Image 1 (cartoon, rainbow, N blue to C red):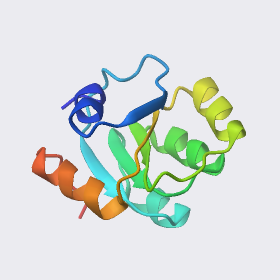
Image 2: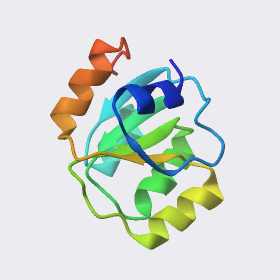
Image 3: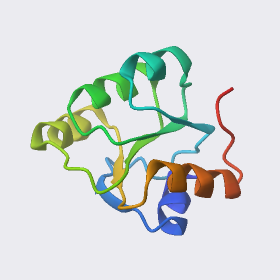
Image 4: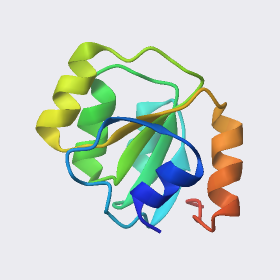
Length: 114
């Protein structure tokens, strides 16, 4: 399923798209610890987190993730959005909890990383 379709179905707000919302999502991973994401997330995954600082973009870029969904209406640093635009990493946001977003992704058939 494409990131754009996930965004539509979950009513996510797109903050940075960089023209990559048509990217196919291969799976999903949820964590707020960057070290866990770096160890377990895979290229093409969508990452679900409450983090909003610029380091999330660096991790997503390093792993070639499809995008980042920031949950619980968390504030996102302006520097994060600038870096995401520059690095080509889509950032979407929602007021839903991480748990709810992961549940919805599962219902859409997006597999998790085991």
